[in-house]
Length: 499
Image (tube, one colour):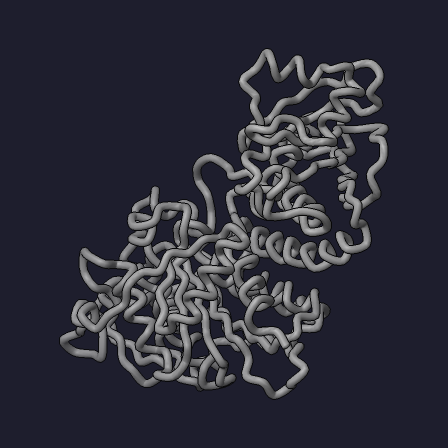
């Protein structure tokens, strides 16, 4: 796929995309297109319900006198509501209209209404980003009907009066899109392909981007005392792994890094606390947190981010064979704390317990953020629109909230408190790994907080509701896997932690 930025000119082939605003009608480029089309756009608007509201689309096969194959008019809504996420969604919507068509080229000449929050080079770059995110496909296991499934689109051009600035802005954004695509690929892979060892191999291959990547096997983790993580994977024939990715881009080479920790359960059967069959489908995606961390680290390296960062992912498979962890087992974590395992399907927090402790004691980070498809309870609370945010630090929480709004990966802060600790009190160990019927997401976060050092700013993102989508596809996300978290973490770093 070729992305181009060019000065405003006549569109001589492919689809021509212009805009209309709610309340003010056709924007200048659309008015130009209407004139070239002999008023066809205006007549189509008059005979339809198209008014320029957000999400509306008016499509015309180009009439005589117009060199483009078709004209697509996008509704951009009210000026004050048209921001970067709206521009990305508009571009993705236009690209989606070409699905199944023979068009190989699309040209955006999208003006912003007066008072819009995004314009110029930024608008052009966000249009390109939205278009690119829409082009993602995961078809490598299909052998039939590929002509119907694969888009013919090969050239995406954005017309702008600020070509050089748009190219510079897009250069950074394209690396973010590539990180999102990597995360999506990892989550979409079937579990018979993406074992912990294969995931680690793919992470190791990112060394070519400038990342330093180390892989710890079970023997090394046993020496470190990672009984919590190792207990989860002991029922699988596939060896558990701990992968550490490092990027040292700060001008101050010894500056403490920001640390990202990801849950990487490559398949979660529930272990001996076996999931029902319907609940087991999709559990190849239980490594969505680890995928987001890897995608983020790739992005930081590719765009040469001026920050020191470390990503730690615990990779396991939770299976129920004769060696599997049992309900009532007690495991000892790397921190020295003991855990009574009452439900082997509450395994992600055990993986994170050791990965969190390792990240802190090994690298002394300035902050640590973990991401995990941790609880179904967070979906009961927030559905599929927000990730749950739990944190011991107000400043970090605010920064994550702002970053989420900027890239349309919203988070919602949930409570923590000592009163919830009694729900995970064990009769024979330091804690138990489940807390009962209520406040499931909170007790999981309370559990994780026990593996965070007292003075370390920490945030836990429960992404169980946002890492994949089983229902209607969102405009920017044409696949089951969303790649959620890469854009959020990259924006957080860019806005707050680079030199």
